[in-house]
Image (cartoon, rainbow, N blue to C red):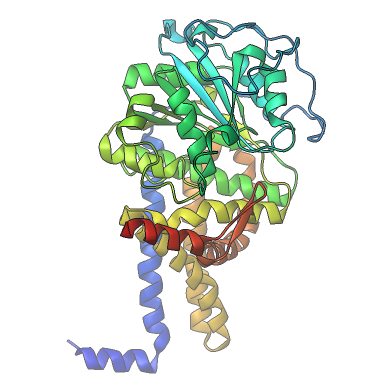
Length: 467
């Protein structure tokens, strides 16, 4: 058996042998990870009668000119939710044309809902889309007396609050975040603070959150409530997808985003709570309060979904679920251009260094290294063709593993045709992953007109820890 020195001498004479071993280890780990994710996705049960094929095309209208809305199903706040905190928006006269069609009682499998629900919609400068979101929420087939809608206006300057009231009338309560933060200067996590305020005002037993630019299907509340009542989960993550976009950038975002949704479902099924999306999330109000809300994670502006999931998962192990149901899908819009996409993903990735569960960090670093060495070995091919062959083999196994995982996920979302774009986008996805990792750790980003610097946040976090 060769000694350690003999092996080092061997690698010095032919360094690509060492590269081959490194590549084999990273590739094997990556393929295993993707197969575990595939197994987790396949093991996540799909809800019965989840055969609805929701419309994939949103109503078209200029974003800068919100549409008018049809009559609403309610002219008063449901009796289950008496008016509480009054804001300046609530005191304004109610519009005569709020949104939505008459609600149809939910009768899925003879299910008779009984859970009071509060839907929370944080919104900042979303006048062009908040109306359709509220309209979709007012059109739910869940009993109107069992749910309320709270829109939290996060210092909007475009009339977002007025559009929300126009769309929902008295079925919607608008809370102005500015009125609550007068005594709390220095807040960085505005969205988290908005959700905390809304939860405190909520009358519902179950909290559902979505985004102002999202559109839930008509049975969203019914499906989430049914899962909560039958499973007893403390938190429920739901499926989110993009409306289709014709551009290559739009297709790239769809493929990447749906893979994240699939990973979230698989991870939750395996008891590893590393992903969810605040556009389709539900949790018990009591569970939120039991973990102290966002206390301890309120220095990071993003992470109102994943970081909260980590806290609830620690407090209530085994009581988080993923609702794999087509009727529970919430749809939203991809970013229209590369700059917007990059800023969005910087925001998403910026919280990766703040995870307390080091297993998540280990997986992220491993995936990043795997993607890094593929182009690195290919570039080293100018020195020795063996390096290039190693890089090509890594790419081949990545394509195979990703495809095997993506096929059932895309089939669930009725987006299997995106596989035709999968191969051409592999190289661009590798470049995206390689640059996004370090960039999100150090580079500031802008979102909704606010500038966020990760280094400033890290210093604030250390100061808070010293106190």
